[in-house]
Amino acid sequence: MAPSLLTTTGLLLLFSFASAQTRGDNHASCTLNDGFGMYCPTTCGVADYMLRYIPSVENDLDRMENDLETIANLTQESEDKVVYMKDSTTTAAQKNPYYKKSSDMLEDVLRFERTIVAQEDQIMELQNLISSNEQRMTELKQLSIQLAQQCSEPCKDEVEIQPTTGTDCQDIANKGATTSGLYFVKPATSPEQFLVYCEIDEFGRGFTVIQRRRDGSVDFNKDWIQYKNGFGYLSPDDTTEFWLGNEKIHLLTASLSGIPTVLRIELVDWDGNRRYADYTMFRLTPEADNYRLTYGYYLGGDAGDAFAGFDFGDDPSDRFFTSHNGMQFSTHDKDNDKYDGNCAQQDGSGWWMNRCHAAHLNGKYYQGGRYTEKDAGEYGFDNGIIWVTWHNRWYSLKETTMKLIPLSRLTAGGQQGGMKEFAGLGAS
Image (cartoon, rainbow, N blue to C red):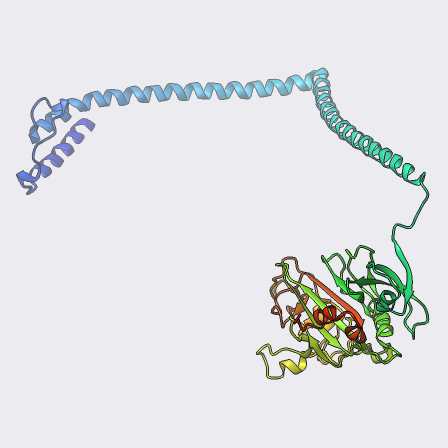
């Protein structure tokens, strides 16, 4: 029945294809097939071919069914054997006590092997640690030998302090000192002497250095007491950073002689360019007035007068609220500025803040100079080492120096060349 039905269906399909309205030039030629001989078949030819092909296909299908049945029988037999083997193993384990003991022993052996491997790893780590400690001990022994050799020599103070003393560095230079370095000074109103760095030039001028920024090695975000007493490091070779201390600066500028003090500010940017600014009649009031900064006028220089304030273009009052003359000193724990907030806290330093600044030489040290609001941290204000009349507020300077000298030194006889250079007037 199956062959007859399949044949009938195939013939109907073929007659259907033959009756379709298809142009003869739809194909340029027919593709020959070995199954049809050398000629393109007619519809009847296709039907004859299918009738010859069907019996062989049916035989192949019958053979495949037999093979599948044989495979199914073999699979069932294998499953039965597996079940039998499992049952036999379970029965043997139940009947033979040595089987369970053997299993337990095998588990113990495996556990012991894992323990041995873990202990070997620990032993290796301990050996590495011992080797590292032995190397460290060798280094410590060598260091001990070096220290013993040094201690065998007489101890001496490596910091060389010059013997000459005076009321300030210019007084020391007037006494014949020609070498820059560390000296003890005792201003007229000071109860005791204190150490300073004196910068003595070839003209015999003695500058008392009150601030130095070199490399960012000292954090200038300090409290009121630290700014009062001073912080950082004084070195005889002038390679360190420090703030001399507001109390000492007050004593140095509270001259009983009536001779005004000049503040010189020296600046260096990250390209090595140098600028300076001079302010005469500079002084700090005592702590009772919060070390207020005052000066008479801007004496000159090529860095510009940033202490006078700056018009940032944000508000018509910018210059007034960023000037520094007459401002009290502020730190993050003692706010004396003109701002509703705390300029010292926001900018991370102590300074004579207004609302807030156009000059800020105690600001945060930024490597490379340029920084952004994002770099400035939580508050996002211009908190670098700033002198806006030279570089803008988003450029932090590389080096700064603040130093003092009596105004009278500018008119000392025989030093006119030095005086003109210092005053920023230029050589004629």
